[in-house]
Length: 219
Image (cartoon, rainbow, N blue to C red):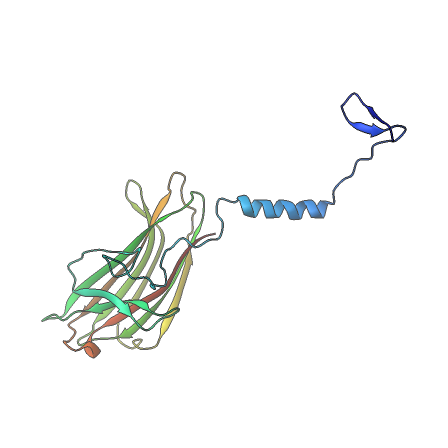
C-alpha cells in the first residue's frame, strides 16, 4: 500500500480519508477520576508512626513518641491490654500523701500537606480508679505552631466519677473543621491527661488509663 505525505505531516493511504476516533466519554471520566486520586495532595494515608504502641523506644517508653516532663506524678508505661495488636500505652497515677492534680503528656510531630483536612482517631480505656479518686480529664489535640499554637482538632473527655472505670475501650474520632493552612507542613499530635486522686502503694489501687489505636489521616 502506498502512502502520501499531507501538508500537516500525517501519513495516510492513497484515496483514503482519515477517520477521527472519539473515545468513549465514560471511559475518559473513569481515567480522569483515577488521575485525580493519584495526583491529589491529600491521599488517604496513615501519618502517625507506632500508633498501636507495638515498638518500644530507646529513650522514651515508645518509639516515635515523646514524653513531656511535667511535675505531675503520672508514670507513662505499657499495658498488655490492647484495643488492637499486643499492647497499649498506660498512664499510671503515682502515690501522693494528699489528693492532688497529676499530669502527663505525650506527643508526636507529623509532616503533612497544606490544604488537606485531617482525621484523628484513637481508643481509650478508663481501666481503674485509685484511692480517693476525684476526676480524670483527657485531651487529644492536633495543632500547628504559627504566631501561637492553633488547634485543628481538639477532643476533651471528662470522667467526674469512677462509674465508667473498668467498662472497656471507647473509640473516638474527629475530622478537622478547616484544612491545614497554606505554608504549614508540620503538626503536633498531643495527648494530655490530668488525674485527681491520692492513689495507693499497691497497683490494684492506682488509677490507670489506657491509650491505643492512634491514627491520623489526610482526607
